[in-house]
Length: 65
Image 1 (cartoon, helix red, strand yellow):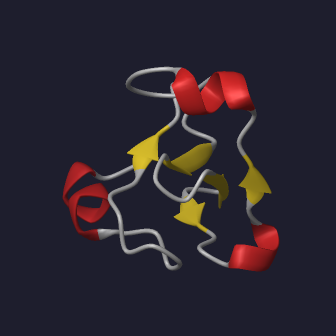
Image 2 (cartoon, rainbow, N blue to C red):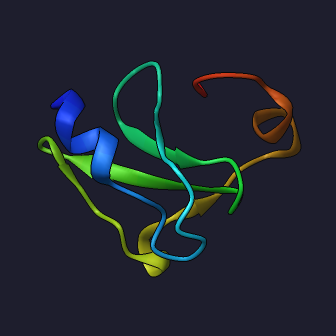
């Protein structure tokens, strides 16, 4: 994912910064506790498409997965 795009994207729910997962398949909102999918390089920033982070994922520092 393009770094400049990642710098301007925010969680649609909390408006907090997003972190790209290690495998590049999700954008993580630590504040919101959600992971938004990235499909074919396109972030899907819909709350209905997001999954809830596990407790372990919420406690990890940096990128998830």
